[in-house]
Image (cartoon, rainbow, N blue to C red; front, side, top):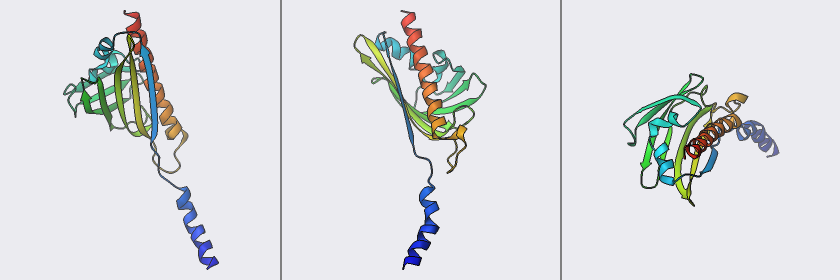
Amino acid sequence: MKSISLLAVILFAPLVLAHGPTPQKVVEAVEIAAPVERVWNAVKDFAAIARWHPGLAASEGNDGNAPGARRTLRLRNGEEVVEELDAYDEANREYAYRLRRENVKAIPASSYSAVFKVTAAGDGARVEWKSRLYRGDTGNMPPEELNDEAAVRAMQSFFRSGLDHLKTMLESSG
């Protein structure tokens, strides 16, 4: 009996240690000293993110803010990412979208979904951007540039730079 148990440990131990990727979560937020409607008007066009995100050279889309609409983001390094709108709620100033076509050179994630929401915060607004994502390499031993930490770092950086620029842009334009 002991030999069977030992054999089971030897055979199955690598399977216990080997596992696929686990979902990662990124949440970034900013408070902006501007009326909530003004903030929402600056960000509500799903395809027009390049108007306020400094990391983008361009963005273009189709079908406006209808679920199923797609946008292509062209990063300043020339790489592109395609995202698709899943839900759009004008009344609650919120939309949800997901990665449609991955490009790990642009963002080292194999898939992600995100929610962008603007809420009132006193006399101003609070913008929250959150995502659930998977690393760029979904194998058991991803290279450093495609592991969980790289995916989270890239998404945090993308969200943070966009939110910080949006705050500066809206607060300085009074």
